[in-house]
Length: 390
Image (tube, rainbow, N blue to C red; front, side, top):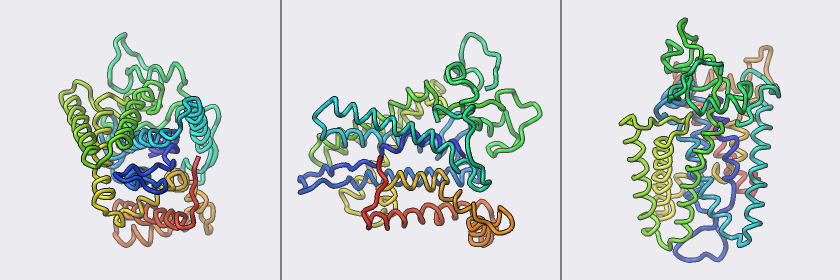
């Protein structure tokens, strides 16, 4: 599930900006939009969930090729939030040149952190591996195959992979793409497992899900978020905002579903197809609208406090939990055997052992010992006024 880490390393650091509360009555001082913080916290939590429990629950992990599983919504949700945060944070900067400088500086910071985190404990924190070979570093976060002149949307011969192989080189592409869990590659599909004896050569190949062409398509998810942010700023009233958000979200969702099930444009996260953009952006719009109704209109906030705290310190929780930096540090201390660590003991004796099921135990471990734990930590840091921002 390392792909999830790559999915967000280069994008989500935008999310720790302070947004003004755009309400019907102007507040005396700027406040954060609680529903946006909660949505951000939900997205970080989903990332941790799909990253650490996706191996046991394939429906949580990425779809091997076409289709959308839970993990496939994480990246577009982040980009949607990034778009909203851009609109809210830059609206107070009247100087266009200054705004451009801020965007360029933030982009450079994102690239820096994306490359830096590849060399930490984030690879396999339970295996104590460390470091990254610079000859194989992913600049964006295949084995040679024989293809005809006309491209296809299947794994070996699509234009997205071809351009990445030619420009980035196969050594700088993601070595464990989700397609390795497809039926053509393994008999254990949708679980990972040994390759079939007759598996095609592309099953062994790398593929960059955050490559050049797919990143261009991903910009549309951010633009949709920017539009929603402008609606929040310009519309003065809850009904007026919801009249823009909900129909737009439904229209995107329906359009994407039609394109996918008519096979006109299949939904595919790794290719970042147009139908995938529509489905995931529409879902993001509706989820945010639901949080906006529950929190900002109905005032039901305490139920979502852990998510809000995570959303206010998203960078910290992402690096420590989703990137596995904290787990990697803890796993450095073991007794006699490298597997005798505190994390391993908690998983085995408190969760897996009690439920007599590794699948259920790992799921509960991620929910309570990771997501809820970091929600409480983020809440304590919030009370102390400590935030990690770029």
